[in-house]
Image (cartoon, rainbow, N blue to C red):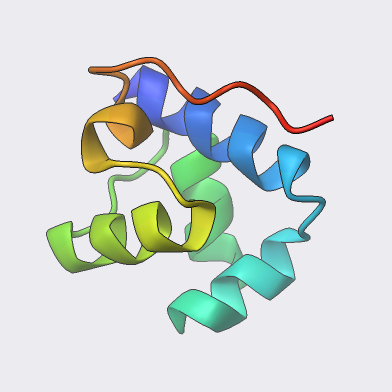
Length: 73
């Protein structure tokens, strides 16, 4: 899920969040979240839902089946 990895990085950076902050919210290790952003592992379905909620996007947007919303500027 290469597009998921790209979207996770883009969304986290757009929200100005650290990997550590996101991993704490998701109750994961920072290393596990880093693997998602580097396309070295795939989150579980419940984690995908938490990520979509955290970033304010749909699951389709998160995984690349729909475009991400425009970045807030």
